[in-house]
Each structure stands twice: as structure tokens, then as C-alpha cells.
Length: 340
Image 1 (cartoon, helix red, strand yellow):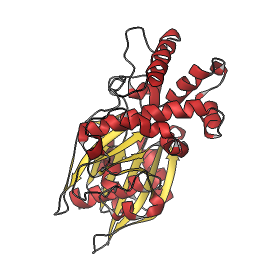
Image 2 (cartoon, one colour):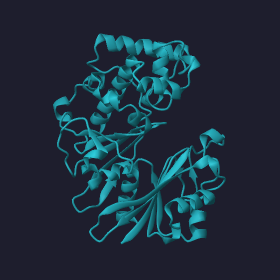
Image 3 (cartoon, one colour):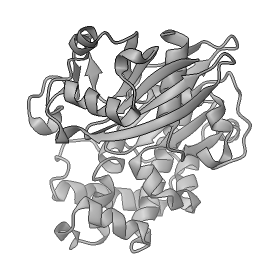
């Protein structure tokens, strides 16, 4: 029995787990914990708190896999490399190479934070109905290209392919910064709403006069609050958290519908870009806090507004990863193939 420690390291908190990997190549999550990054003063302290939560030292594991927001240069992890402002970086140096050597860690790797998500789709985790909200009933090609798509504080995406012999390939991409354009089959109402929203965002200096509107700007972080403010001009008095609560509780159906349409546009764009017959699997804080938007017709209208290859695209699975362990299981799968 092998023990793998996995971290899901975000900008504000770090969740971690102990995963057991048995002789039948099965993964099982044994213990989890979560620590707020800014409540501590160093990476060593963060690691110690994780060890206390998991009741195991890093050096006792057989492998460690860390899915992390940011860029790792082989020595340190940077949330946004090149910036020194506290809100654009981690609150203390994430010098993993030094700490791992000092504490005699086993083999470890730091990977893109959405690599574990797509790797989770290579496991039996995806077959457990309570972990997935299926948005269609399309059959999954087990060795087809699949995409993990996350909408939260940013937009994350990772595509991958599982090979028949059990190894896998992961792509490299940045989808969130693609500009939003009106798709070929958008009805007049949606075209006009898009134009008016764009004017509003520029009039409020949310985007500059010559700045394109990207999916990340409109869907991630405070994006929903921008849409809410478009419909309710008094919303400036409310923060993003308050607005999210109002939308979740049904107080702005037009905000939810508009957001769902733009998310549908993004999904349609991802379908056309990757042709993922292994499916698109969504997650992220914004997605999981507003699951009812997938019951809204505007989500699917956003997808079908780009009609190219639509009959083929309708055969691609589409779902939401709703469980709490997909990042852990995916990171452990990665470690089992690359680190053990």
C-alpha cells in the first residue's frame, strides 16, 4: 500500500489529502484537511499545519503531488510571476525545492492546478453518480480528448488524453483570455444585449475604451457582479459576495440567464477548439455555487449559437464535477503514474 499526499493550493487556501494506492491500482481518500494560507507566515509553517491536519509527515509519504495556482520555476512557486504586490502573489515565499530538500520529502511535483481535475476524469471517480451532474447523456470515449474547465476566481482549463496502456498526455493552454464575440446564430435580442452590456462596462471603466471583453473578465471573479450591475445600476453599493448570494436565491433571474448564456458561449468555444469526445467537465467556485444555471435554457442557447459541427458536438459528454475530492484523486492518479 502506497501513501500519496496531495495538495490543492489556491490563492487563499490550501486543501490537502492522504490518498492510498493499493496493489490493484485503486485510489482511496483517507483523510483531508484545509488551511488558510494567509493565517500563517511561511511555507514551512503551512506544511506543518497540513501534516497536523493529515496526521502524517511529508517525509513519510511515498509521493507528493501539488496542484497549484501560479507558475513553478523549479525552485519557487509564484502566483503571478513578475508582481510584488501582496494581492498578486503569495504572502510568503513558496520555496518548495528548498523545503523538500531540508525535510527529506519523497519524490514530489508541482503541476498546473487544473491538471489534477482532468486526471480525475481518468479514474473511477467519474463513474460515481454523486460526484457528477451530467448535463447530457452522451457516451464518453474513454480514450478521447477531454477537458476540465473551471470558473472561479479565474478561468482554468486543461485538456488531456488517457491512453489504453494507462499513461496519459496533458495539454498546455490559456482559454480564459479569449475575447468574446457575437456568435453566428445569436438572435437579435442577444446581440443587442451584448452590445449594451459592452457599452455599460466601458462607461463604468470596468474595461477600457479599447480593451476587448474576455471570458475571464465577464465570468470569473467579480464578473457576475458586473452583469448584475448592468441590470441594477444601484448595485455599486453591494460587494460581489452579496450579489452572488442574491443571484443564488433567485433575486435576479436576468443576471443568471445572461451569465448562463456567456458560459454557454465559452463551452461552445471549447468544444470547437478541442473537439473533446471525452467530454467537458466543469467545476470551480462560481460554477458550483450556481448549479441551477445549467437548468436555464440560455446556457444551451449559448452553446448552439455557434452552429459549426453541432451534430457532432452534441455527442460530446458535458457535466459538472460536484464532488469534493476530484482534485485530490486526480493529483494522486498523476503521482501514481509519474512519481511512484
